[in-house]
Image (cartoon, rainbow, N blue to C red; front, side):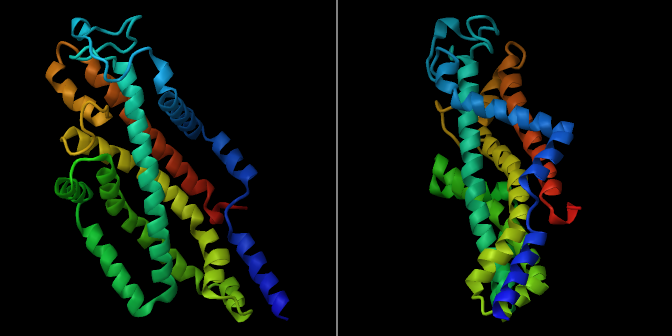
Length: 296
């Protein structure tokens, strides 16, 4: 009897688990905006990986005699006021943005998923206390909290990531907690408990697989916000410090040359916009494609 009950729980979780890989890829391929977003993101990632060999110039290599050269054969995106190659700085700036986005999303997904699962599974006073912490962090504007943390602990890439994680994980925690509170009353969870499954086994095999699609979709959407916040912090001087390139820092440095060298602003702003829009499109597509309720 116990084995049959456990088999029923396993089959039930398989029904509501995430869609099969083939079905997910088929849905993505049918959506033209999503395909464009994937191609755009792939191009930006390849550019970041190939940054050292993309141009013969280092991102901090100065040449005052060749300052403010317009885009041409020698410098495809021109040079800045110090004669540094803009394409090299764009490529290395992509490394900063993608690294910060990936690290912050991974950390926020881990913290938020664990926090929300514990709160939703236990309920009662534990849930009330844990969610008050979440409410307190959500009450602070994300940009203001990030500025406060980087201003107190210093201007470094690590502090930027920590600040962005603190502003992002409460959203995932609240999302996971609400889903876990619904799932813990479902038949397959009750069957697993009746079969003698421990709380860890219930979480590992029955709850987390059914909230994974929410975490992936929300994390993809949050990546665009995190990259934009990192650019904002660098723009106001609280993020990446020169001469390390950042898209936000490059936009700030270009404001003094809007009339004489507008390409200095267009290039980093275009790559930042493309990255944010592509991540938003991909996040929306994953939200639909990974939702178990969308399966037929």
